[in-house]
Image (cartoon, rainbow, N blue to C red; front, side):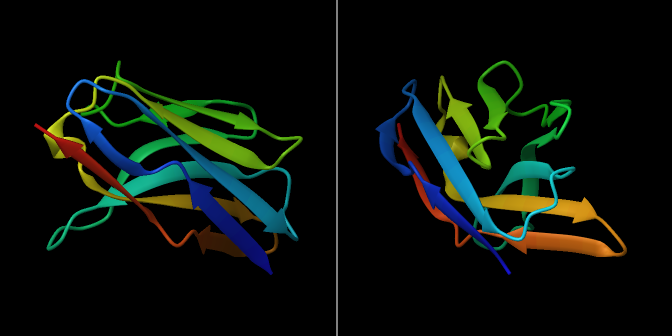
Length: 118
């Protein structure tokens, strides 16, 4: 099985910064994509940013230029550096890892709350 443990969420004022971390453990296929999603009450979970094993990234337009995703494969960890935070970034942020190897594998973290005050 695979476990994802997130950390780094919290309360910050608008304009501030936070760094989220997500460490994956277990039986992980190295050719994976890791990513961060977020969700607010009553809305669908949305992609914030993702990064492939080859470090190709996909970043949502709403956070482009403010958020940076990176990964450390030696630690099976993905990071999300969030700068210039806005109140609309308030959400529960979820870590995700997925790969395709004789079938699709998809795992989620428990979520971490990010609250940006105005």
